[in-house]
Length: 286
Image (tube, rainbow, N blue to C red; front, side, top):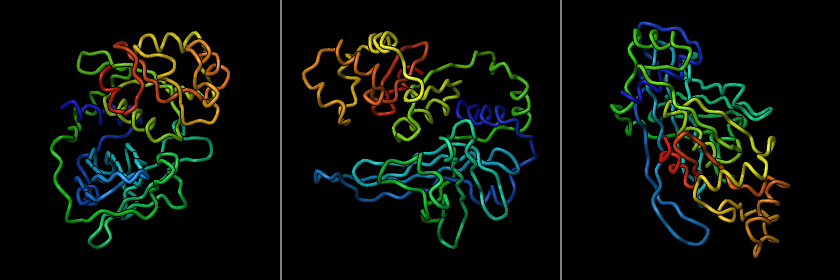
């Protein structure tokens, strides 16, 4: 029931009221939708990717939505949160405190004939996608819909009970805390953040381009992660080219002066530090 608790905590944090049961729309759309397809890299390598949308009822008018979409050359879109029933659609409104300035994601999901379709209008969810990804006018076959058994809906009484525990204590355990050095425009960073929140963690989000860590903090983070400053260098940036033969001290100086050189996301918990490349590595410290 760990996943059910995660959904409860999402609702409790948002202060949503408990209702008797899912509406016909929430029930109709609930399930796991997927599609596998051939994909590839610019290098010519080919592989199979899968688009996945999961919708789980949480009360009469709300559902937990989790999406993972794959695109060419390793790019992706990822989103997780609570959507509400509005007319004939479920609509996810990104919390204002989580959205990049002026780019609040609004995503609509609905059934249209033999498809589950979604759209973010004029690209409002672009910050949840890599450069080649997007959430405008996507769809998955309705026939791919499967019942979800691994993300159980919370019982209303249990939801009310957890809602009263505003101090973050659930079922006798202190809520896990984590810090992420985050870039909301990076799909890998968003995926890592979604993993943390999906695990029920209380997450401190530091947008390191706006609030850069000091040289000393960076050195300590890399030491705790068991990695070198060079391994934490974002080599894809033009500013990294002059550092090709530099030692770690020089790289740390450069990172402190120009935080775009810091590879993201760095995640910190009481169990350690991990660079979320790939994002799933953060599970090692949860």
